[in-house]
Image: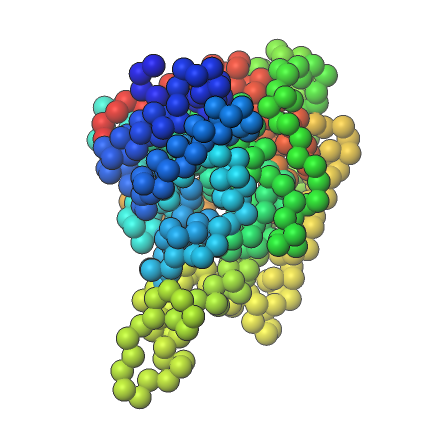
Length: 495
């Protein structure tokens, strides 16, 4: 076997069970790939010694014959997940030097399944961004290029390092988090699969909080089957997270039957945005045709409050961020500013936060503090919460009509160049989440699947939105779209 790092999780699992491959060999192949990929900026804390130690233990477990599906699989972990003894900075200067003494529940679940941690992955600071340009480590870079251009493209955000690493075959899968599209948008920009499960399906304990009522962890992989295998290992009830659902986790891979005859797929008219590129419109129509050919029924639906989703999201998310980020003050851990004689505790707070938080985080904290302040709480925050309830009701009404899943574009464009939106109105950057934020506001599962290339050879993705807790059904529909789209393109190696 050559280029082991290019294997899917499913193929690597099967090869290791047959004895054709060891986890140690697979891990070394990934570590070699990472070593030569500094130009991508994907891995920010490498753990090669730990990875080799874990691979050795995984091989022993596989030989003993009691290994779970994910045993021996090398993964990258987003820097938002706390990992015991390994720096966990959320890509922020304010958490410089923070090394947790505990493991997040999701990463612990993966370790219990015998996975290998290759290192920590780049991301937008505190998961705030859609382009991975707000990281204290510098930009993560998309392995894809436009035609013959050398322009560095965004891998999307906030899980940009995860998307870049999986697309470039530096790891077989990666963890991501999704607060408003941060798994699905980068997956679409890099030609990989990313699923955000139902809110509460994966524990948030040990994941650095951005917006607690919206954050959800999920896998980023090379195929829908891999997403099903990895998601099962990540999920499970956790008493340490009060929002964790006490529900049995099904065998998602076993639900990939490919049979979607009679499924009702909704096409929301409100997602037809002004100025949407023709290529996105054509891809959406092609996705509907593929599902129709597979025996699904395509129906037009209405989600009337969609136009209010972005404004509501950009009130609720910053408000929760303002509350969550108040804990970073230079007192207990992380960065602390150097004080001058006569400085008091308020000076320490102000200087530490000014030095530790980047401009996008500062912007969102200020917006969030403003909308929560006396006199504006009802006008902004409470109104946004009421809009959120209406958005959730839109989906509930559609599902009550027998719709099994909803098909939309994943992003309003292909990946754009790093720096192209840097000095633009921040709202233009926020529009990247236009198709994804509704899913977080309603707490629903959503998946992005690569389905085609644009005229410049860049990947474009489709999004499927499912019923709550029915990730298995959603993955099965996505599996059929994937099979019919036949997307096998890979970026040409330039790094």
